[in-house]
Every structure is written in C-alpha cells, then in structure tokens.
Image 1 (tube, rainbow, N blue to C red):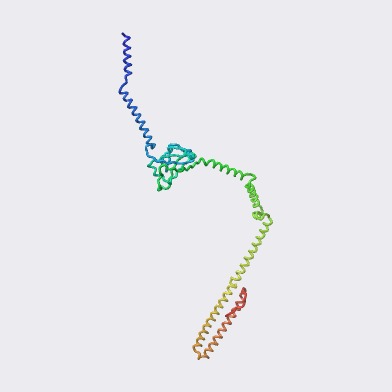
Image 2: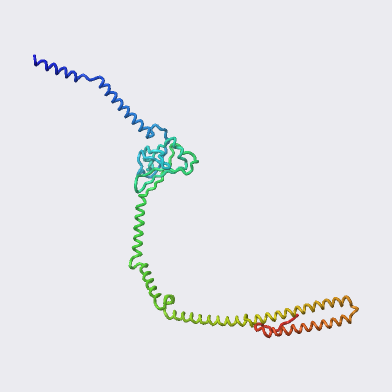
Length: 328
C-alpha cells in the first residue's frame, strides 16, 4: 500500500513538467518575432544607408590596372563621397573597367569636362577622385566611359633610386684622384701659392718675374711722366688764364678794338648823314666838301688807331698762324 503512493506522485509531477505553459510559449514566440523584425529592420536600414534603394547613374572608368581599387570603394568629389565602385571587370582589350554608381541627386556635379583620377600614396590606400573644372558644361550621360588618370607615388621610387645611383656615380667620378676636378683643384692651389709670392698676381699673369718687373718699371715711369705733365699743365694754365695771362691781355685788346670799331661805326653814320645832305643840297658844294674833308680826316685817324691796335694784338698773340689782320 505504501509503495503505490510514491509512484503515483511521481507520475503527476512528470505530467506537470511535460505540459507547457501557454503564456510562456506565447512570450517566446513574440520574442522571436521581435528579434526577426529587428534583424530585418537592421538589414533594410543598412541597405538604405548603402544606397541600394536609391536611383543611381553609372560611370565607367577605364584604366590600365585596378591595383588599390576595391568594390565598395568611394569616389569623392571635393572631399564628399559622390559614388561607389559596384564592379570591376576586365575588358576584351586587356584594360580594366571600373563601374561606379553615382546617386542621381549628386550626378549633376559630373560634367562632360570632368576628370577622374586614382591616387596611390606612399602611406594609406588608394583614393578615387572626380574633378569638374567647368560646372556649366553639359551633364555627364548615364553609362559614359572616361579615362582614369593614375598617379602612383610608388612607381616613382624606382626611377628616383636610379637617379640617386647615377648621381652618386657622378659624384664618385668627380671626386676620384685622377679626375679632372682634382687636377683643377691642384692647379688652383698652385696659382694661389704663386699669388702669395713676391711677384703676386702679375707673376701669374705673365708667367715669369722678369716681365712682371718690366711692367712695374713701366708703370713707375708712366706715373713720373704724368706728374711732369701735371706740372706743365699748371704752368700753361697760369700763363694763359692767369692775371697777366694771354687771355686777359687778349680780352683787353678785344675791348679796345670793339671801342674803336664803335667809333668807326659812328663816323660812318656821320658820313652817311653828310652824303645824304650832299645829295639833298648839291648847291652848297663848298661847305659840304669842307665837312666831308674834316670827316674823312677823322675816319682816317680812327682807321690808323685801329691798325695800330691790330698790330699790337698780333704782336702779343703767340698762337695766331697769320700775324696780319686785314680790315675791310
């Protein structure tokens, strides 16, 4: 009797454990549905963020190689992502075609004159860029193919190393013991030593000390001759332009000649007036003749004075070639 009671209790407990709670099952289903909805929403949001549902325009970039380019890589314009690489394929010609999807709302920045570049730096990954110089040009059509300009800094390193090797080889050739540069430096050192010697730069210029001494002697004689010429010039200046020089004496004589010529001019004017009177009054011939004789005597006297003064000037003036002075 006592053994049958424990077996019945165990069967009841097993039945209670086997029967699920309907509320717990309902909560589990709702939790699973919520997780699935969250996953689906996350996937949809990621697709939306990636621009899957956005209308795009395709641009095909053609290049020789696609090193550094990957699917999903952004193409930037002025630092802003404008498109994304969707596919990379190899054309029958052996060139690479990079297909870039650009959003329709941003496609107006791409024009017929736009330039596309792929920049590969020494540090960091490659960068795909678009440049538009003329915003007013025609828009870039859908599916347009453009050449991709590649600027690879790594490609310049072998050329740079080659140039450095050539430069080092040239420097090594210049600094060799038997190089022309070494011989030139030796010649310069020798010339510097000769310049510091007794003959100085003249010895280097003429090649020997004898010619240098002759040149120095000639220079000394030239200096002495110039000193003598300076003395002669001073004496000639005093004789010609001094207080009793020829210039002052000639100036006084010229002043006297000018005075005599002025007197002669006045006498000639008087003679002209007398001749006019003679023509006007021909009847009074005796009186006019007497006046004419006196005037003639006065003119002859002035002419004699002028002649004497000219002789005096010719006697004092030493530089005249012809000592005779003719009057009209």
